[in-house]
Length: 340
Image 1 (cartoon, one colour):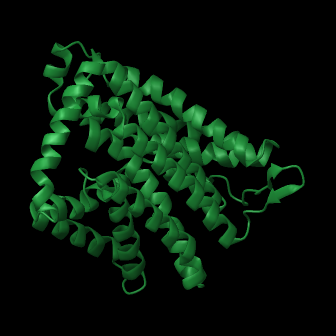
Image 2: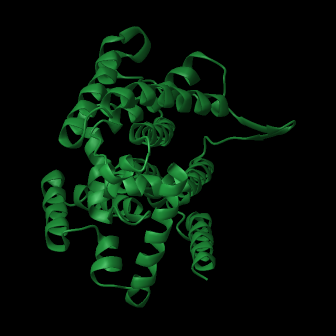
């Protein structure tokens, strides 16, 4: 029954996204929803590391910047088209994630976090210095061409109009969410939870911890690169701040606001951040100050994300909590057996 209910939630969410532009015709609302979807993908990708594996990465901006610039450069200088460009940026994200994860997973805790930050600056420096390809400090100004997407012979889709791009974003983001959800609900995902809870115990029963950590690092990097590519298409440009270290703080704030124990926590966090940023920037010149104050209030008062607070602290499903904990313990035990 729980699984059936989960399917209905997914169906309702998809219906809401499909009907949203039909109910709110203004480009203002459509653009904000696009920002929420891209931000949500960014946050969910990072939460695969933080919430499910216990790895705090400060270097997700590297994959975001790679995705953004790969999308911009390939569409401007080649005729690959959007599908092949997406595959290319996913491949580059995976390759750099393997390289980055191989070294970073040798360390733990804040040493791991700061090493990811250092590796992210490699991408940022390359973007700044490789002026002939990336445009240097100015970025890829002048716009990014958006070619037609050829689905079938004689059938093409133009995602240039904002409404078309909105639905294109919905398809990519929802598809990415489904894949991420499949990962965290698989035996692989339950092994990650066991590593998060007790890495020593997981290693004691024979699990190769680094192999699993590098694997989820690659998956997270791929979907973060997709979010970066969507951003480049959304704003028709790629700029150095996409790979700057401060960009890596955005998904962390989303996770802190929405919660890391629930898969959709970063989605709620992204919605809150976009709403607050839009509201504050239209009413004050000190939007960043008030945005920080609001986030501090939310985190300090609840001491966990909004969904975590509702589901675990207040016990929205309090009657089922014991059964859920028992089920999680059973799945973790099964995952450890698979990991052996």
